[in-house]
Length: 92
Image (cartoon, rainbow, N blue to C red; front, side):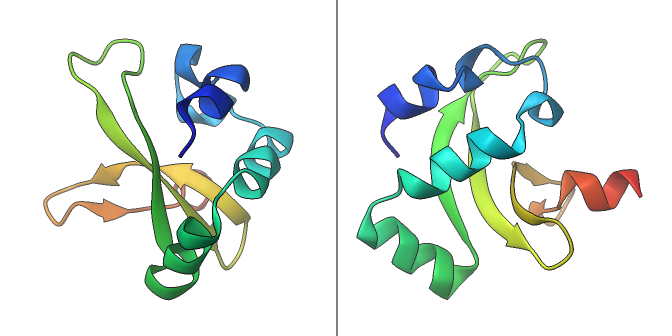
């Protein structure tokens, strides 16, 4: 992912991933290269950046994926199995 695009959207300074709005997600999707779109379609997720969220000691990989219920979302691998879980599905 283009680090300048991620920085221009203000994602580098967010306190949590829930602060990223739908417009930012669409900008991220439109900024993907053909190769990244291909990975997204085949694997279901694509790495967009390694970010340090507020309160975290190290950078974590942030992935873009498409949730069947909520559309495009971003998250990081979680839990013992390091699964990427839709943050909106968790809130429901």
